[in-house]
Amino acid sequence: MPVLKAKQLSFFKSRLREISQELHRDMGLDMPDGLKDRAKRDPLNFDRATWQQAQRIGEDPRDLKKIIGQAFEFADSAKAFNAVLEQSAMQLARGDKRGFVVLHHSGEALPLHRFLGVKQKDVRARLGQPEHVQTVDQARAFLKDRMTAQAERQIEELKKAHDKERRPMAQAVRQLKGEQRQARSDVMAATDDVEVGEQRRSSLRPQDGEHHD
Image (cartoon, rainbow, N blue to C red; front, side, top):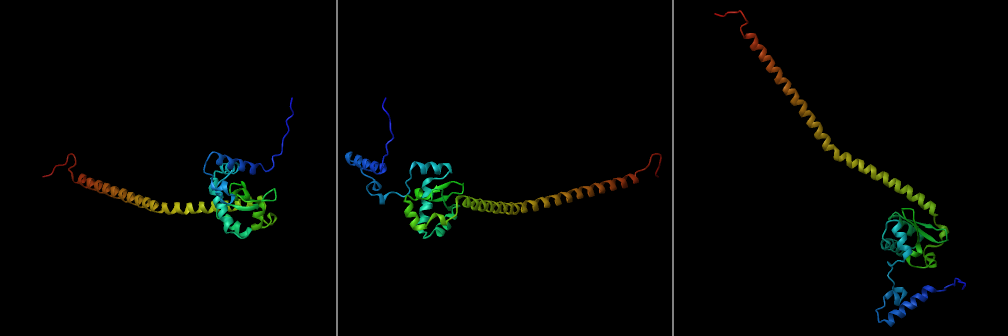
């Protein structure tokens, strides 16, 4: 029985790229720009791992790559990058493998280099060393506090809006109750007048056995 051995496939991604290029040429197919030149790859393209991770947190991977990519493009430091991420309820943090991650508000850690489509060394050249930023646990605690505070503000705003909407209704209810009380009072007064009038007419009627000339 033959013995099966695992073989190290060095540079297999580069080899697959070359095979793909050869197939396009052999079959006379138009080669995508990103396949012709790595520099022309669509930055919003994503691999299976990126897609699966985005699906777990209910996000579109293209949206995440766009948000993170734009923040990285205009940031000249880790602090500036994190400030832009905060606007989308995310935080920059250091991962377990000495690399940067972006912590999503769901608690999921997104590998930064994967969502940027660049190498770790290029990320460090822009942001510095990961040891200088917060840990994932610290980022989670920050986001939790921020989300809690935001939720409390939203609840308070909803209460104020609800109270504002209720004021005209409460005023209408008070007015209706006042009108009902006045109507009952008018009915009772009218009833009293009827009874008084009836009593007067009764007192003027001849009693039994009485004769009037």
